[in-house]
Length: 356
Image 1 (tube, rainbow, N blue to C red):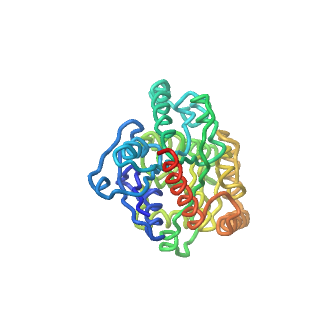
Image 2 (cartoon, rainbow, N blue to C red; image 1 turned 45 degrees about the vertical axis):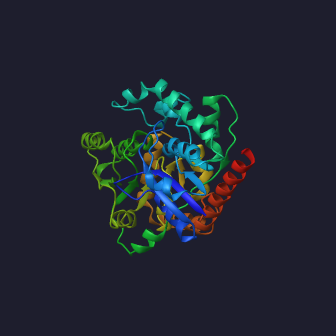
Image 3 (tube, rainbow, N blue to C red; image 1 turned 90 degrees about the horizontal axis):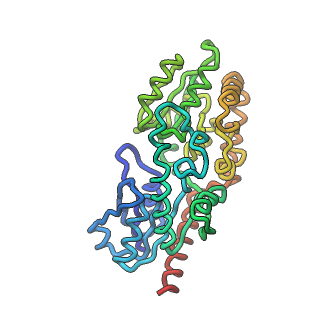
């Protein structure tokens, strides 16, 4: 099958979507990977994509969909589109403070709710023009339906992970008195909550905090850590094995609102503490140790508990690894993921043919 894959480009790191395109190639498909910008309104036309003349188009995330729909009309080809969710913190569906916009620099984002609502309504119009559609979990379906006040016709497609770099950099490491997070530096990830939780722990018991990531919150997070006297380091995008080394040297991970890093933690048999949001629980089940969302005192308590108990860390890490490798959660292994994607691509072709 000739598949045009469309995803935003990212100079900082290899994205999961780029890895998905590589997996399709390994399965024998011809793949043309086109990069776009991070806009839900503007399309990017690539001469190479037009010349490729695909059998089907895959809009791999929300920023891909305007371009995918343009190609649908230019090339007269079917489109499969995937969106994780409609961000409730941007669109007024829920209070932004519930998703990390509870700090001094967040007001400009909160003031743009009306603009965001219209932008995502336009995006849903494009989404509905596609021939097959998926979202990342049943627990996010309400975000579409609250915004449009209409039922959403879309299937669910869960995450997968690329364990090749994890295997490549796997190396027995001495555990340090540190914890880590892998995340974009953005409010919804609530990294500032982890800093605040660490500040509530006596200095003599407080682990260092290593962050693999990049983003607009970097200066704010350093300022907050300095004010609270938390030993925090931001290590960038984690290239050339730095991410994998940091995980293996850490006692455990804290991922308040991130999906793929939970799997990276489990691969190395490291436990992971996470906020127990409906979507995270739907996807990962018992793979994480859950904390009430936005409860910094309870987050502190879990950090202390895991920091002081090596046996607990070992047992929870082994349990997470077992769940992952034996497919006991809603996370797909690579073959399951490719089966699910191929099913949607074929569904798009079938639906498009019926509509002609």
